[in-house]
Image (cartoon, rainbow, N blue to C red; front, side, top):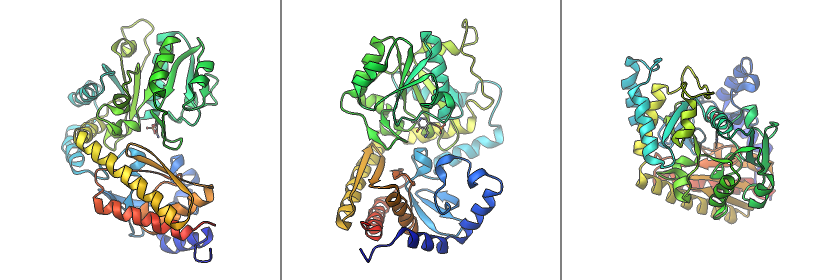
Length: 404
Ligand code: PMP
Protein backbone atom coordinates (compact mmCIF):
# COMPACT_ATOMS: atom_id res chain seq x y z
CA UNK A 1 0.00 0.00 0.00
CA UNK A 2 1.66 3.15 -1.24
CA UNK A 3 -0.12 5.43 1.23
CA UNK A 4 1.03 3.64 4.36
CA UNK A 5 4.05 4.61 6.42
CA UNK A 6 7.04 2.28 6.76
CA UNK A 7 8.76 1.63 10.06
CA UNK A 8 11.78 3.66 8.89
CA UNK A 9 9.61 6.68 8.12
CA UNK A 10 7.95 6.44 11.52
CA UNK A 11 11.36 6.28 13.20
CA UNK A 12 12.55 9.36 11.26
CA UNK A 13 9.45 11.28 12.24
CA UNK A 14 9.83 10.17 15.85
CA UNK A 15 13.48 11.28 15.98
CA UNK A 16 12.58 14.66 14.52
CA UNK A 17 9.83 15.13 17.11
CA UNK A 18 11.72 14.06 20.24
CA UNK A 19 15.27 15.54 20.28
CA UNK A 20 15.24 16.19 24.04
CA UNK A 21 14.29 12.56 24.69
CA UNK A 22 17.14 11.45 22.42
CA UNK A 23 19.54 13.60 24.38
CA UNK A 24 18.24 12.32 27.73
CA UNK A 25 18.56 8.73 26.55
CA UNK A 26 22.16 9.29 25.43
CA UNK A 27 22.91 10.68 28.90
CA UNK A 28 21.08 7.79 30.58
CA UNK A 29 23.18 5.28 28.65
CA UNK A 30 26.30 6.71 30.31
CA UNK A 31 25.09 5.68 33.75
CA UNK A 32 22.22 3.20 33.36
CA UNK A 33 22.94 0.04 31.34
CA UNK A 34 20.82 0.26 28.19
CA UNK A 35 19.69 3.67 29.38
CA UNK A 36 17.05 2.24 31.67
CA UNK A 37 16.52 0.66 35.03
CA UNK A 38 13.78 -1.87 34.31
CA UNK A 39 13.45 -4.14 31.34
CA UNK A 40 10.09 -3.09 29.94
CA UNK A 41 10.62 0.63 29.51
CA UNK A 42 12.83 0.80 26.47
CA UNK A 43 12.16 0.42 22.75
CA UNK A 44 13.73 1.47 19.47
CA UNK A 45 15.04 3.93 18.55
CA UNK A 46 14.91 5.25 22.17
CA UNK A 47 12.10 5.80 24.64
CA UNK A 48 10.48 9.17 25.20
CA UNK A 49 11.47 10.59 28.57
CA UNK A 50 8.39 11.44 30.57
CA UNK A 51 8.83 14.54 32.70
CA UNK A 52 5.53 14.56 34.56
CA UNK A 53 2.05 13.14 34.70
CA UNK A 54 -1.31 14.56 35.73
CA UNK A 55 -4.46 12.49 35.63
CA UNK A 56 -4.72 10.80 32.25
CA UNK A 57 -1.96 12.94 30.71
CA UNK A 58 1.80 12.55 30.52
CA UNK A 59 4.21 15.23 29.38
CA UNK A 60 7.61 14.43 27.86
CA UNK A 61 10.82 16.45 27.99
CA UNK A 62 10.12 17.84 24.50
CA UNK A 63 6.85 19.29 25.78
CA UNK A 64 4.52 16.79 24.04
CA UNK A 65 1.41 15.63 25.81
CA UNK A 66 0.27 11.99 25.76
CA UNK A 67 -2.88 10.21 26.79
CA UNK A 68 -1.67 7.66 29.34
CA UNK A 69 -2.86 4.13 28.55
CA UNK A 70 0.03 2.52 30.46
CA UNK A 71 -0.52 3.83 34.00
CA UNK A 72 2.84 2.49 35.06
CA UNK A 73 1.90 -1.01 33.95
CA UNK A 74 -1.53 -1.07 35.65
CA UNK A 75 -0.39 0.32 39.00
CA UNK A 76 -2.00 3.77 38.68
CA UNK A 77 -5.68 2.89 38.59
CA UNK A 78 -6.66 6.53 39.13
CA UNK A 79 -4.06 7.94 36.76
CA UNK A 80 -1.13 10.18 37.62
CA UNK A 81 -0.82 12.40 40.69
CA UNK A 82 -4.33 11.47 41.86
CA UNK A 83 -5.24 14.38 44.17
CA UNK A 84 -6.52 12.34 47.16
CA UNK A 85 -3.28 10.31 47.11
CA UNK A 86 -0.95 13.30 46.78
CA UNK A 87 -2.84 15.05 49.60
CA UNK A 88 -2.68 12.01 51.89
CA UNK A 89 1.03 11.52 51.23
CA UNK A 90 1.67 15.25 51.57
CA UNK A 91 0.03 15.26 54.99
CA UNK A 92 2.10 12.26 56.04
CA UNK A 93 5.56 13.46 54.93
CA UNK A 94 6.27 15.93 57.77
CA UNK A 95 5.52 13.20 60.30
CA UNK A 96 7.98 10.55 59.12
CA UNK A 97 7.49 7.71 56.65
CA UNK A 98 9.17 4.60 58.06
CA UNK A 99 9.70 3.50 61.65
CA UNK A 100 10.99 0.27 63.12
CA UNK A 101 7.59 -0.33 64.69
CA UNK A 102 4.03 -1.16 63.69
CA UNK A 103 1.98 1.79 62.50
CA UNK A 104 -1.72 2.59 62.24
CA UNK A 105 -1.44 3.18 58.49
CA UNK A 106 -0.09 -0.36 57.94
CA UNK A 107 -2.91 -1.78 60.01
CA UNK A 108 -5.47 0.29 58.09
CA UNK A 109 -4.26 -1.00 54.71
CA UNK A 110 -4.21 -4.60 55.97
CA UNK A 111 -7.76 -4.20 57.34
CA UNK A 112 -8.92 -2.80 54.03
CA UNK A 113 -7.47 -5.76 52.10
CA UNK A 114 -8.94 -8.24 54.58
CA UNK A 115 -12.34 -6.54 54.19
CA UNK A 116 -12.24 -6.86 50.41
CA UNK A 117 -10.76 -10.35 50.07
CA UNK A 118 -12.55 -13.01 52.13
CA UNK A 119 -9.66 -15.48 51.64
CA UNK A 120 -7.27 -13.02 53.28
CA UNK A 121 -7.14 -13.15 57.08
CA UNK A 122 -3.62 -11.84 57.62
CA UNK A 123 -1.26 -9.71 55.53
CA UNK A 124 2.52 -9.28 55.32
CA UNK A 125 3.85 -6.31 53.38
CA UNK A 126 6.87 -6.29 51.09
CA UNK A 127 8.32 -3.70 48.71
CA UNK A 128 7.32 -5.27 45.40
CA UNK A 129 5.21 -7.98 43.84
CA UNK A 130 8.39 -9.96 43.22
CA UNK A 131 9.22 -9.99 46.93
CA UNK A 132 5.65 -10.95 47.76
CA UNK A 133 5.82 -13.93 45.37
CA UNK A 134 9.10 -14.99 46.96
CA UNK A 135 7.56 -14.81 50.43
CA UNK A 136 4.47 -16.75 49.30
CA UNK A 137 6.76 -19.44 47.89
CA UNK A 138 8.69 -19.68 51.16
CA UNK A 139 5.48 -19.95 53.18
CA UNK A 140 4.16 -22.67 50.84
CA UNK A 141 7.42 -24.64 51.06
CA UNK A 142 7.44 -24.35 54.85
CA UNK A 143 3.75 -25.30 55.15
CA UNK A 144 3.87 -28.35 52.88
CA UNK A 145 7.42 -29.62 53.36
CA UNK A 146 7.64 -29.75 49.55
CA UNK A 147 9.93 -27.60 47.45
CA UNK A 148 8.69 -27.21 43.89
CA UNK A 149 6.39 -24.54 42.43
CA UNK A 150 4.08 -25.14 39.49
CA UNK A 151 3.70 -22.11 37.25
CA UNK A 152 2.12 -21.49 33.87
CA UNK A 153 3.91 -21.00 30.58
CA UNK A 154 3.68 -17.26 29.91
CA UNK A 155 2.90 -16.57 33.57
CA UNK A 156 4.78 -13.89 35.49
CA UNK A 157 5.22 -13.57 39.22
CA UNK A 158 8.34 -11.41 39.41
CA UNK A 159 11.89 -11.17 38.18
CA UNK A 160 13.72 -13.20 40.86
CA UNK A 161 15.53 -16.37 39.72
CA UNK A 162 13.38 -18.58 41.98
CA UNK A 163 10.25 -17.39 40.15
CA UNK A 164 11.43 -18.01 36.61
CA UNK A 165 10.82 -21.17 34.56
CA UNK A 166 14.60 -21.70 34.48
CA UNK A 167 14.66 -22.32 38.25
CA UNK A 168 15.30 -25.99 39.09
CA UNK A 169 12.37 -25.80 41.53
CA UNK A 170 9.86 -24.47 39.01
CA UNK A 171 7.81 -26.82 36.84
CA UNK A 172 5.47 -25.45 34.19
CA UNK A 173 2.23 -26.37 32.51
CA UNK A 174 0.41 -24.85 29.54
CA UNK A 175 -2.10 -22.12 30.45
CA UNK A 176 -5.73 -23.23 30.64
CA UNK A 177 -4.67 -26.90 30.29
CA UNK A 178 -5.93 -28.80 33.31
CA UNK A 179 -4.65 -32.13 31.94
CA UNK A 180 -1.15 -30.67 31.74
CA UNK A 181 -1.44 -29.51 35.34
CA UNK A 182 -2.69 -32.93 36.45
CA UNK A 183 0.29 -34.58 34.74
CA UNK A 184 2.80 -32.20 36.38
CA UNK A 185 1.35 -31.75 39.85
CA UNK A 186 3.13 -34.47 41.82
CA UNK A 187 3.78 -34.73 45.54
CA UNK A 188 6.87 -32.56 45.27
CA UNK A 189 4.83 -29.49 44.37
CA UNK A 190 4.28 -27.10 47.29
CA UNK A 191 2.13 -24.62 45.43
CA UNK A 192 0.49 -23.83 42.16
CA UNK A 193 1.13 -20.20 41.27
CA UNK A 194 -1.48 -18.74 38.96
CA UNK A 195 -2.58 -15.35 37.74
CA UNK A 196 -6.33 -15.10 37.15
CA UNK A 197 -5.36 -14.18 33.56
CA UNK A 198 -1.90 -14.14 32.03
CA UNK A 199 -0.93 -10.48 32.49
CA UNK A 200 2.58 -9.88 31.21
CA UNK A 201 2.01 -12.99 29.09
CA UNK A 202 -0.46 -11.10 26.89
CA UNK A 203 -3.67 -10.52 28.89
CA UNK A 204 -5.03 -14.00 28.21
CA UNK A 205 -8.12 -14.80 30.30
CA UNK A 206 -8.67 -18.14 31.97
CA UNK A 207 -11.03 -20.62 30.33
CA UNK A 208 -14.46 -20.87 32.01
CA UNK A 209 -14.18 -22.98 35.15
CA UNK A 210 -10.42 -23.43 34.81
CA UNK A 211 -9.39 -21.60 37.97
CA UNK A 212 -11.97 -23.32 40.19
CA UNK A 213 -10.91 -26.71 38.82
CA UNK A 214 -7.27 -25.74 39.33
CA UNK A 215 -7.93 -24.87 42.97
CA UNK A 216 -9.65 -28.21 43.52
CA UNK A 217 -6.90 -30.15 41.78
CA UNK A 218 -4.14 -28.41 43.75
CA UNK A 219 -5.89 -29.15 47.04
CA UNK A 220 -6.60 -32.77 46.10
CA UNK A 221 -2.86 -33.24 45.56
CA UNK A 222 -1.89 -31.53 48.82
CA UNK A 223 -0.55 -28.37 47.17
CA UNK A 224 -1.51 -24.78 47.95
CA UNK A 225 -3.06 -22.39 45.46
CA UNK A 226 -1.21 -19.08 45.33
CA UNK A 227 -3.26 -16.60 43.32
CA UNK A 228 -1.23 -13.70 41.97
CA UNK A 229 -3.55 -10.68 41.93
CA UNK A 230 -0.80 -8.11 41.45
CA UNK A 231 -2.46 -6.93 38.22
CA UNK A 232 -5.94 -8.33 38.58
CA UNK A 233 -7.06 -6.85 41.91
CA UNK A 234 -8.35 -3.78 40.03
CA UNK A 235 -10.96 -5.93 38.26
CA UNK A 236 -13.24 -6.51 41.24
CA UNK A 237 -13.83 -5.29 44.79
CA UNK A 238 -12.75 -8.77 45.82
CA UNK A 239 -10.26 -9.03 42.98
CA UNK A 240 -10.65 -11.70 40.32
CA UNK A 241 -10.93 -14.31 43.08
CA UNK A 242 -14.29 -12.75 43.99
CA UNK A 243 -15.44 -12.92 40.38
CA UNK A 244 -14.41 -16.57 40.06
CA UNK A 245 -15.55 -17.70 43.52
CA UNK A 246 -12.04 -18.79 44.51
CA UNK A 247 -10.54 -19.18 47.97
CA UNK A 248 -6.81 -19.24 47.35
CA UNK A 249 -4.59 -20.25 50.25
CA UNK A 250 -2.33 -17.30 49.58
CA UNK A 251 -2.81 -14.17 47.49
CA UNK A 252 0.04 -12.12 46.09
CA UNK A 253 -0.65 -8.41 45.78
CA UNK A 254 1.19 -5.33 44.55
CA UNK A 255 0.84 -2.41 42.15
CA UNK A 256 -2.49 -0.62 42.97
CA UNK A 257 -2.35 -1.41 46.70
CA UNK A 258 0.54 1.08 46.91
CA UNK A 259 -1.38 3.88 45.14
CA UNK A 260 1.65 4.48 42.89
CA UNK A 261 4.32 3.79 45.50
CA UNK A 262 6.45 0.62 45.72
CA UNK A 263 4.69 -2.17 47.59
CA UNK A 264 3.82 -5.84 47.62
CA UNK A 265 1.88 -8.03 50.02
CA UNK A 266 1.07 -11.62 50.77
CA UNK A 267 -2.35 -12.30 52.22
CA UNK A 268 -4.02 -15.53 53.13
CA UNK A 269 -5.21 -17.95 55.75
CA UNK A 270 -3.98 -17.00 59.18
CA UNK A 271 -2.33 -20.33 59.96
CA UNK A 272 -0.18 -19.91 56.85
CA UNK A 273 0.70 -16.27 57.48
CA UNK A 274 1.39 -17.04 61.13
CA UNK A 275 4.34 -19.13 59.94
CA UNK A 276 6.15 -15.81 59.59
CA UNK A 277 5.74 -15.05 63.30
CA UNK A 278 9.08 -15.15 65.11
CA UNK A 279 7.72 -17.29 67.97
CA UNK A 280 6.66 -20.06 65.52
CA UNK A 281 9.08 -22.99 65.42
CA UNK A 282 11.20 -22.84 62.25
CA UNK A 283 9.43 -19.67 61.27
CA UNK A 284 9.83 -18.12 57.85
CA UNK A 285 11.95 -15.13 58.80
CA UNK A 286 10.63 -12.21 56.83
CA UNK A 287 12.41 -8.88 57.02
CA UNK A 288 12.70 -5.78 54.93
CA UNK A 289 13.78 -2.33 56.02
CA UNK A 290 10.97 -0.66 54.12
CA UNK A 291 8.22 -3.28 54.53
CA UNK A 292 4.96 -1.47 55.14
CA UNK A 293 6.38 1.89 54.12
CA UNK A 294 3.90 4.48 55.27
CA UNK A 295 3.79 6.53 52.07
CA UNK A 296 2.82 3.38 50.15
CA UNK A 297 0.41 2.33 52.89
CA UNK A 298 -1.50 5.60 52.98
CA UNK A 299 -1.39 6.03 49.19
CA UNK A 300 -2.61 2.47 48.64
CA UNK A 301 -5.45 2.70 51.14
CA UNK A 302 -6.55 6.01 49.62
CA UNK A 303 -6.45 4.63 46.07
CA UNK A 304 -8.40 1.52 47.07
CA UNK A 305 -11.09 3.50 48.89
CA UNK A 306 -11.68 5.41 45.66
CA UNK A 307 -11.86 2.19 43.66
CA UNK A 308 -15.42 1.24 44.58
CA UNK A 309 -17.78 -1.08 42.72
CA UNK A 310 -19.25 1.62 40.42
CA UNK A 311 -15.73 2.79 39.50
CA UNK A 312 -14.71 -0.78 38.65
CA UNK A 313 -17.85 -1.23 36.55
CA UNK A 314 -17.18 2.00 34.66
CA UNK A 315 -13.59 0.93 33.99
CA UNK A 316 -14.73 -2.43 32.68
CA UNK A 317 -17.48 -0.96 30.45
CA UNK A 318 -15.08 1.58 29.01
CA UNK A 319 -12.46 -1.10 28.40
CA UNK A 320 -14.97 -3.34 26.61
CA UNK A 321 -16.07 -0.43 24.40
CA UNK A 322 -12.49 0.59 23.64
CA UNK A 323 -11.57 -3.01 22.73
CA UNK A 324 -14.48 -3.05 20.27
CA UNK A 325 -13.51 0.28 18.74
CA UNK A 326 -9.87 -0.73 18.35
CA UNK A 327 -10.93 -3.89 16.53
CA UNK A 328 -13.27 -1.87 14.30
CA UNK A 329 -10.49 0.60 13.56
CA UNK A 330 -8.18 -2.22 12.51
CA UNK A 331 -10.85 -3.76 10.31
CA UNK A 332 -11.57 -0.41 8.66
CA UNK A 333 -7.85 -0.01 7.91
CA UNK A 334 -7.59 -3.58 6.61
CA UNK A 335 -5.09 -4.55 9.34
CA UNK A 336 -5.55 -7.99 10.88
CA UNK A 337 -5.64 -7.35 14.63
CA UNK A 338 -7.23 -8.88 17.69
CA UNK A 339 -7.70 -7.46 21.15
CA UNK A 340 -7.70 -9.57 24.30
CA UNK A 341 -9.18 -8.19 27.51
CA UNK A 342 -9.41 -8.99 31.19
CA UNK A 343 -11.49 -6.37 33.01
CA UNK A 344 -9.86 -3.00 32.37
CA UNK A 345 -6.61 -4.42 30.94
CA UNK A 346 -6.28 -5.04 27.19
CA UNK A 347 -3.70 -6.34 24.78
CA UNK A 348 -3.65 -5.53 21.07
CA UNK A 349 -2.24 -8.29 18.87
CA UNK A 350 -0.91 -7.81 15.33
CA UNK A 351 0.88 -10.39 13.26
CA UNK A 352 4.59 -9.74 13.68
CA UNK A 353 6.68 -7.82 16.20
CA UNK A 354 7.56 -5.20 13.55
CA UNK A 355 3.91 -4.33 13.11
CA UNK A 356 3.50 -3.95 16.86
CA UNK A 357 6.57 -1.70 17.05
CA UNK A 358 5.17 0.39 14.18
CA UNK A 359 1.79 0.68 15.90
CA UNK A 360 3.49 1.74 19.12
CA UNK A 361 5.49 4.48 17.38
CA UNK A 362 2.51 5.66 15.31
CA UNK A 363 0.47 6.03 18.50
CA UNK A 364 3.27 7.92 20.27
CA UNK A 365 3.47 10.27 17.30
CA UNK A 366 -0.23 10.93 17.73
CA UNK A 367 0.07 11.56 21.48
CA UNK A 368 -1.07 8.20 22.84
CA UNK A 369 1.20 6.41 25.31
CA UNK A 370 0.96 2.61 25.08
CA UNK A 371 3.33 -0.29 25.72
CA UNK A 372 5.60 -1.83 23.09
CA UNK A 373 4.01 -5.23 23.67
CA UNK A 374 0.50 -3.94 22.97
CA UNK A 375 -0.84 -3.94 26.53
CA UNK A 376 -2.94 -0.99 27.60
CA UNK A 377 -5.11 -0.41 30.65
CA UNK A 378 -7.58 2.19 31.78
CA UNK A 379 -7.58 4.55 34.72
CA UNK A 380 -10.52 6.33 36.30
CA UNK A 381 -8.87 9.58 35.16
CA UNK A 382 -9.77 8.89 31.52
CA UNK A 383 -12.84 10.87 30.48
CA UNK A 384 -15.20 9.63 27.74
CA UNK A 385 -13.64 12.19 25.37
CA UNK A 386 -10.18 10.72 26.12
CA UNK A 387 -11.42 7.26 25.18
CA UNK A 388 -12.88 8.68 21.97
CA UNK A 389 -9.53 10.20 21.06
CA UNK A 390 -7.74 6.96 21.94
CA UNK A 391 -10.05 5.03 19.62
CA UNK A 392 -9.51 7.58 16.84
CA UNK A 393 -5.74 7.46 17.35
CA UNK A 394 -5.74 3.67 16.99
CA UNK A 395 -7.76 3.91 13.79
CA UNK A 396 -5.35 6.50 12.39
CA UNK A 397 -2.33 4.46 13.50
CA UNK A 398 -3.69 1.32 11.83
CA UNK A 399 -4.27 3.31 8.66
CA UNK A 400 -0.71 4.66 8.82
CA UNK A 401 0.96 1.30 9.30
CA UNK A 402 -1.31 -0.39 6.75
CA UNK A 403 -0.95 -4.03 5.94
CA UNK A 404 2.63 -4.21 4.70
N1 PMP B 1 3.03 -10.64 39.50
C1 PMP B 1 2.39 -10.11 38.45
C2 PMP B 1 1.13 -10.75 37.94
C3 PMP B 1 2.90 -8.96 37.84
O1 PMP B 1 2.28 -8.43 36.78
C4 PMP B 1 4.08 -8.38 38.36
C5 PMP B 1 4.68 -7.13 37.75
N2 PMP B 1 4.39 -6.85 36.46
C6 PMP B 1 4.69 -8.99 39.45
C7 PMP B 1 4.14 -10.11 40.01
C8 PMP B 1 5.95 -8.41 40.04
O2 PMP B 1 5.68 -7.22 40.68
P1 PMP B 1 6.85 -6.12 40.88
O3 PMP B 1 7.14 -5.57 39.52
O4 PMP B 1 6.24 -5.13 41.83
O5 PMP B 1 8.01 -6.84 41.49
